[in-house]
Image 1 (tube, rainbow, N blue to C red):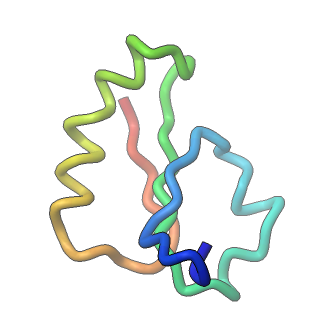
Image 2 (cartoon, rainbow, N blue to C red; image 1 turned 90 degrees about the vertical axis):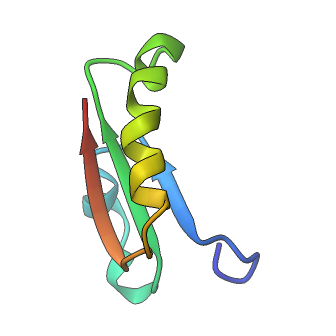
Length: 66
């Protein structure tokens, strides 16, 4: 991801931090936390995600809850 120029990873995988050693990468990870990952639910998360993306990104995991 870093080599390809990505600034952040956005995922619904709440166990990602337990599956991958994210500390070795200097990247921002947004974990979306909602009852499901349907389009209707994702639309509800967009304003919160947009607000986070409009600020300077911080390295590490940020959870965004519905």
